[in-house]
Length: 214
Image (cartoon, rainbow, N blue to C red; front, side, top):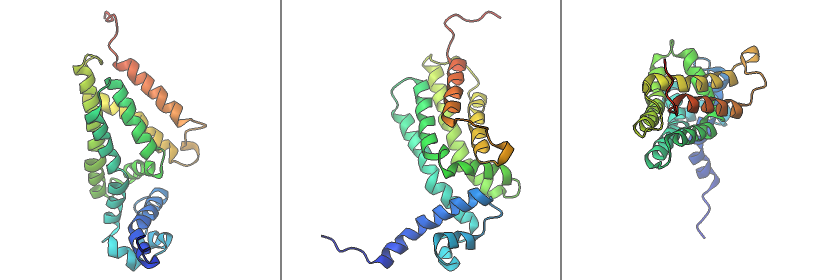
């Protein structure tokens, strides 16, 4: 049997993951501006100096949180889309299910609210988030809509505008779930919310059997 690594080595290898987990909690709970690196280090159980061995500054730490936890889910969605052989609405459902289970129902769901709240003061992190997350997420939905239109499953629509209309209620769900008190969605079931939203999207996109005369 291979020798068990000494505890000190295992601890060192675990530190980046522990720091990213602590950083995610701090960013979601406090926002970008109020998050302090010493608090991240303390929560992770290391010194602030140790944190600097892995991340140069708070911006680098935030980018690492996004790249470690969110970007791989988008890559997974791109793989799903590339290999999907069924109808286009089912593709949209699969993409949303993957996003919800890996992002929407986790602490990462608090990141969009942070970006909305602090983009004006920290345009560099907003630009990074747009390029790495928003742009790729929109591209997935745009491609699924174009696929549905080309296959005759969806009626012709302006795909970019429709993509924004599809994504806006989902973004609002995240904001509600990470807002205090009266801003929170009262007694809402997020799964029911998403199913209802998808049902409305499906009915809005599907070609009518008999075109409506205007």
